[in-house]
Image (cartoon, rainbow, N blue to C red; front, side, top):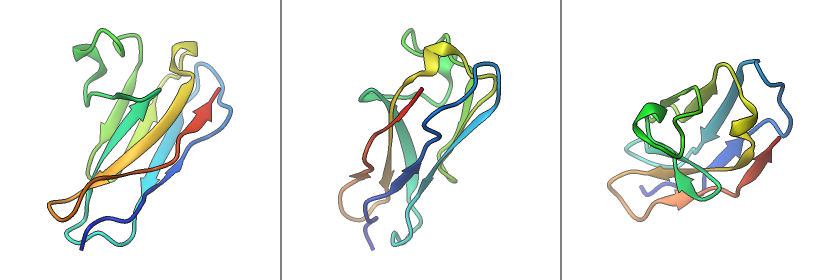
Length: 101
């Protein structure tokens, strides 16, 4: 079963220096989908240190659970976040973007 449109659970305001957890949920996909996160339309790598765009961020990303955890959060992490669910059936589905300040 292809994934349905996922829902991004993003705190709309978060405190710099704290831990922020973003979650992506999708209920229909079988096999269970894997998740990818985007900030301002740019795909977020699993390891931020590998990317010039995200190297100032400190986060962990679990593609199996859809959890994106910032620890600590920096002012650099403000942006519009969306997530994408995909499995090997059908086409990937992207959530609406939610702004985190």
